Amino acid sequence: MAVTTEVAVPVAPRAKSGLAFWLGRNPTIVIGVAILAVLVASAFLAPWLAEDPLAFEPTNRLKRPSAEFWFGTDQFGRDVYSRVIYGTRISLAVGVSVAVLATALGLVLGIVCGYYKRVDAIVMRVMDGMMAIPSILLAIALITLMKASLTIVIIAITIPEIPRVVRLVRSVVLTVRAQPYIEAAIASGTRNLIIMVRHILPNTVAPLIVQGTYVCASAILTEAGLSFLGAGTPPEIPSWGNVISLGRSFFQISPWIIFFPGVLLAITVLAINLVGDGLRDSLDPRIARRM
Image (cartoon, rainbow, N blue to C red; front, side, top):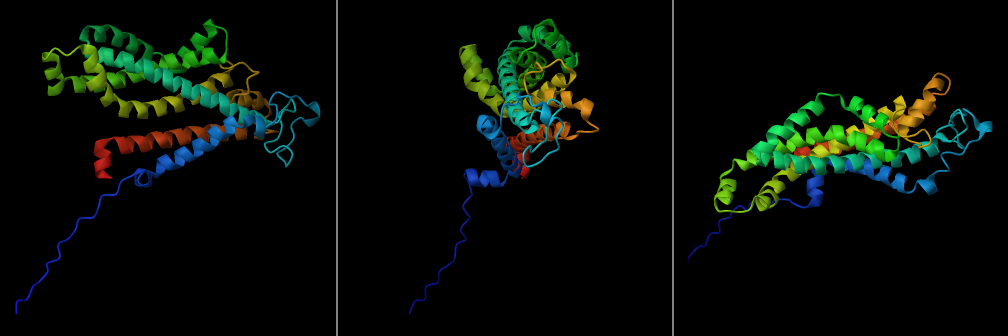
């Protein structure tokens, strides 16, 4: 009688994939996105969550935080909570606008500089000269030459951020352009525009997304600093920098005027940096392999 034996063949476990698994391996992104989602929701729902941030009520001057005024009131009797909620709109609008403009312009200039050596020699000297000037001083100079407004502030913050994006994209393009498949495409007569769009541009997306998050955080801090110095958004706009600037004279007797917008500013920048760090860890092949 023949005896048959079965040999158990080990089965390799199936690789886990999907959005849930990816987010589980990157908890910093989850935390950062969750905080940003709350901030964005409060910015959109500001008319329903808060009252008029410009409403004066002299009888309510410098009232402490309470059930009626959650964050207290300022020296003009205005609700600090309402001003902080509406200030979220300004900060997020400045951060996102500067990040989009700086990355878009820096992407175009970086690809052109990295691909064409003659253009690189001229444009990069201009970028080096711009980086030699502190960004906040350059922004103040630009705002001083023009009438202060939210649009001017965004433009003034965007210009100093462009050189950093250009240098990043240029370094990526120089590395990719030396690859054999790019040289083969050039030798086969492929148009330069097609090479830049089809072969070079996809390689710049990952580092550009990470850089965009840092530009966004830097822009929010710069706008708050400019407004605090009186060179940013007009005083009638309830930005976090303006709220802190107007409350600094009353810091010893009414610290809540500065405390709450300062905390929201720190939390917002922290959340954006968490997202940026998480994206860097997940998009960098060397770090992802190690993880």
